[in-house]
Image 1 (spheres, rainbow, N blue to C red):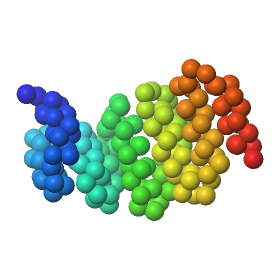
Image 2: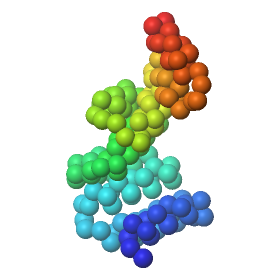
Image 3: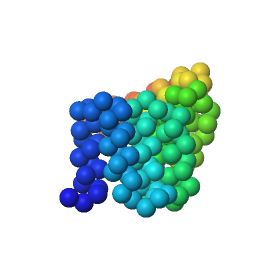
Length: 159
């Protein structure tokens, strides 16, 4: 089985492991990649994040990005690092990362960017802006009420 398939299998089984065991398994798997490999650093960061080791995760996310992480994993790293930073009490830094990411392009992770941006905004006391952003993103997925929700979102943004 190739490395990506084994990685997917490990992530699918995360709930079957104690946090320490999961980290050990992820360390073993990522050690098969070359030192400083961006993908390995990202996956190890996610493992730390998912097991409650946010400080280590933030460092590893930055390392993965500095190592040239690209594509969808790069965007996931930004989202996950921003979430981690918010959990570490740094909502301003989280918001800055997510705002830049919203302006960087569009893909299937747009709604995740919006959701985590809304959380950062709420932590900063900007709840109405957070709700407006969330309602607008949700309105794009509904069969009805799109126009109404867009209007309500705009009203919240102005108040």
